[in-house]
Amino acid sequence: MLDTTKQSDPAPPQDEPHPRQDEPRGCLFALSQPPLMIFLAVIGSLLLMASLHDLLLL
Image: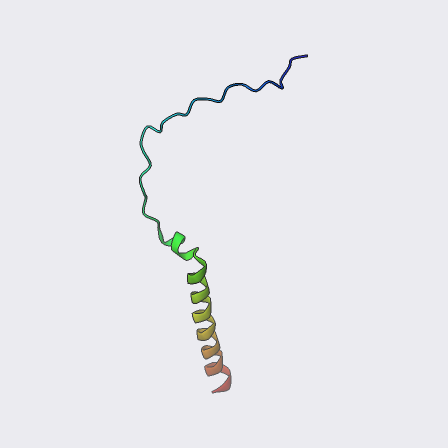
């Protein structure tokens, strides 16, 4: 049987042809941030409570 326990030498690192530049992050990245989502949820719930109050109690 072939001995496969011997590990081969690791491959030499390859340089990227084009260095990666900092790309601007879009709106979806901003919306994925937890503080922003908590803020939007609080504002949304306040608007929902105000609209339900206006519709049902006034």
